[in-house]
Image (cartoon, rainbow, N blue to C red):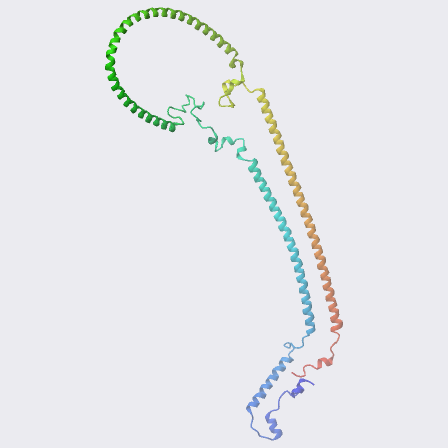
Length: 403
């Protein structure tokens, strides 16, 4: 039984019977109820609108297959889960690649840092400015390192012609002035004491002078007599002394002549056997140091000095060869490290390709499983779900009523 039969309406009788029809049937002339008529008219219009909505196939949305929708939702959830797993696999692989790249970059940065540190240490240790050959030409501390013009007052370099030391310009000038001032003060005090003692002595001497003057006058008479006798003895003694002195002078002149002859012979012998004519190399040594010579006395280098220079040159050659050998070993070590790094990068690339192949195989396996699942689902829908084909009677039961 359809919905229309329950409601008391049929598809053929779509219109309601009017009041006039009732009046005709029952021969009654009743007044029209406007409220009921409006209600009936509203129901009639609602039914017409409902029929338009239901019988219009473009606007109808009733009769959805919920089981098919559930299967679609289930498949979509499975596909979303597969996509999430795939994205997680890609994310893990990307993290692994990023970690490898970060590790290689960090190792490269450390190698560059160690290389720069080694270069800086080499420069600081073996390439200083003080080790250059011409450093003494532009050394900013050359004047500080050089000896001063005068080390002490007895410096042998302070010659008379150098005019590096004048009277009163000694290094102990300040102490000397203090000592002189102290000495002057002591002298002044001593002079004052001496003057005081001198005044006392003068007074005493004047008193004694008067006493002694009388005694001296008496002794003067006696001394005058003794002087006359002594003068005679002195004249005799002087005459004898002059004779002895004349003999001594003649003997001294003869001795001086002999000494002059001996000095001349010694001078000739010294000139013949001296350093100038015998070309002694020691005469060229300077007083300013063993490494300096006097140019006008230098006779050339000795065989020992020439041999020493040759030995130093041989040492420099050996040092140069040693430095070249060290550079060659460093270059070989760098080549070995570069080859090792290239080998490691090749191994990492092979490992990465191997992981990509494994991931591709896993993805192909998953795709194969999805294809099999889709195929099984299609077979299930074709053979299990959609087996009840609709008949003509099935379609005729529709559109009979709006209910």
